[in-house]
Length: 170
Image (cartoon, rainbow, N blue to C red):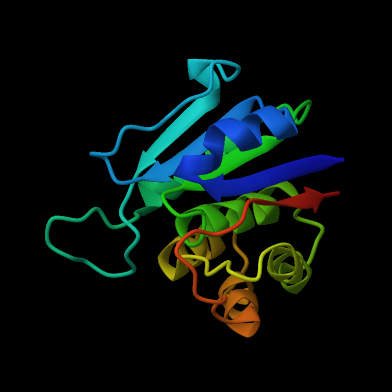
């Protein structure tokens, strides 16, 4: 069984060590230095330089189709021998969206609602970035079902930093 772990930038080293993750996705503003644990080789680390926004904003980087293509291409190469770790700054929005999009891509047999519910059960604070979810939905041909499923689980509880969590894929 495959597992995707999600955390904030500040917990990457601890979660990587505890989970045994050997593949890492960082979704973070381009000017922030990203910690990469020594156990994760550079070739197994994807850096996606985007801001946590859902509409154009001066001085910020809005997620684009190219960013989601990079994410999907990378996670599809994940060997699943060890967990995948996805993080953003706080572990609440970009990383939870990327985990959801990845889960939908890697488990096409599972319904969007089921994966969204798994996300909510695992993290009461998850508030997936709507832009990333919408782009993933379009690219995966899910015809709006991913967006609707995330809308149904609603915004997570407010927090400064999300607690690390994992979702299982079948």
